[in-house]
Amino acid sequence: MNPDSVEVLAPLSPYITSPSFVVYPFVGIIDYEKIIRFYNKNEVEEVFIVPLQYLLEHEPYMHEVQVDLSPCINFPYDKIRNGANYQWRTRSVEEWFFEYENYTIWGMTARILKQFIDSIRK
Image (cartoon, rainbow, N blue to C red):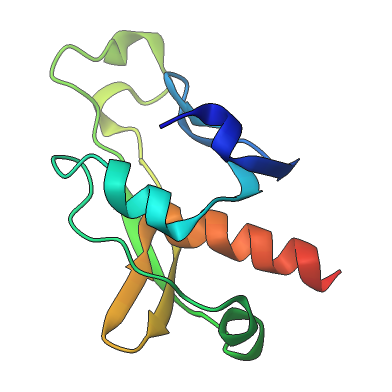
């Protein structure tokens, strides 16, 4: 697909999942027919449309996911206070969900979508 077929409107904030994985999302306009013809079926199961007005009128919901840190087997416990008895903390991560008809948008896609919706509401 020709990159010139996308009208880029604005960048969103980068989404960083780890030091080695950063997504740079953009808001843009593209002809739906071009997406249907050119998307990679090995990477994307299905393409569907959610009207912007629907997203503005229906709040996503959030669930917390607890993330437990567990060091690798070769972790240098001798370098830290309390060594192998160090009390690792559980962290909470927000997991957002958008529902539309029989579709659920969640994960990184929902986080980026929420950032977009929040920015246009301002």
